[in-house]
Picture 1 (cartoon, rainbow, N blue to C red):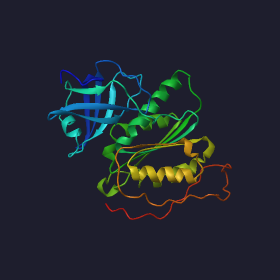
Picture 2 (cartoon, rainbow, N blue to C red):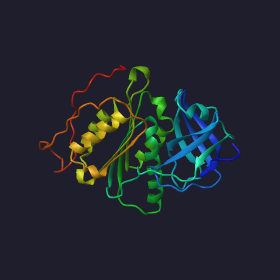
Picture 3 (spheres, one colour):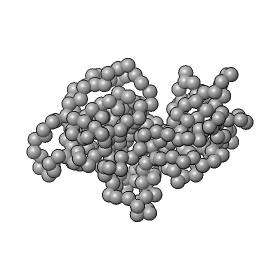
Length: 286
């Protein structure tokens, strides 16, 4: 670990929090500060065998924070996470100097609909933390955020459930954690169901104008396709829909129907986003 590959820096693990057996948060201190925009991703590298393995991870920290915060899921047969997993405070990893990615806040819109699964919350945290700093400095417009964070069980929310709840208490964030396997989490008393289904309910209640909305989906590809599909059909401009897939699958997304011309509803403004749930295939893991 003495000589990083070209374009990489040495970064020390300052702290690690194990959220579940296969999920952990790492805080890294690079040898030099990294410049990035909230929502972008960093590339980590480690020696493996006779070569170097590199993988990208979305940054959860905001650019003004001193440490680079990453939420990482352990993939037993993956190329990099089995090498990362033994790391503890004081150990080192290589991090690429150049942080890249186009999954950033859509400044042309003021209502932001964010859907994610497990580690997919990372870029949204970066955006929200940066927005907190901008609000404190009086440098931002009146933005509102709906964040629906899905997981199999509540332990997978880690420290971010409490962080999002604190932001929600300020009134400009609506944070909705939801678990898809409540039978494995008997103490959970919050929302239950897949991200896309829970999103429909909360977005309907808000009545945000489609012309004000930007949509973002990060995490499981099937969830992404469903969420962005329903927002398109709800007349959110496709130019303001953004996605970040963490892996690919061969399955097609389930069909989703959204009312093209919603009937008049008391208290709802013309042009508001209105969704309805369509029948979906049974959960094969149920």
